Picture 1 (cartoon, helix red, strand yellow):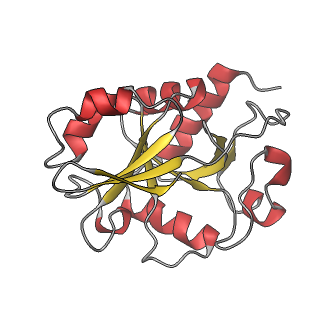
Picture 2: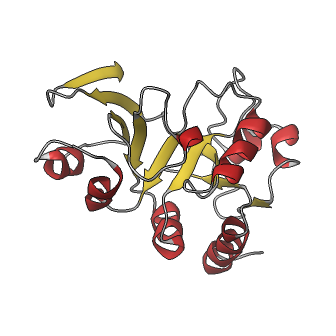
Length: 190
């Protein structure tokens, strides 16, 4: 059985080569890749059979990293995000540094600062943000556990994380909030 540390090393090896992973997040099982690698992001869209107009979620390990990837967040964004009581994805205007296929056509980006131990460790060691999108064909049910991930998905990724494969705990998808240019929060998915 692969241990946590070996899973992290295996993921980094795959991600640095532009590969894709199937991994547990703080919400559901997800498909991931280096969020700064345009070709890897294309692979994610292909695996999911997802329209390019539907953007992806980006995971960060630290709240302060929002300042690196968003051009004009409100001054109190770190306090706002650190006070979320559950996984929350925030849509920010004016994304920075990401390839075009990671950013919505209007220039926005969906970011969640993860609280998951595995995801945090992986992102910190990779030193790059991670794509996180549900591990399903676009339009199919979201797999809340590994046992619910379709074989067609498992067959297309470059690495499947062993950590938490037997965990049958169901977590809700993240709350989805849009941050307006005025600094207001608009709840899109409670």
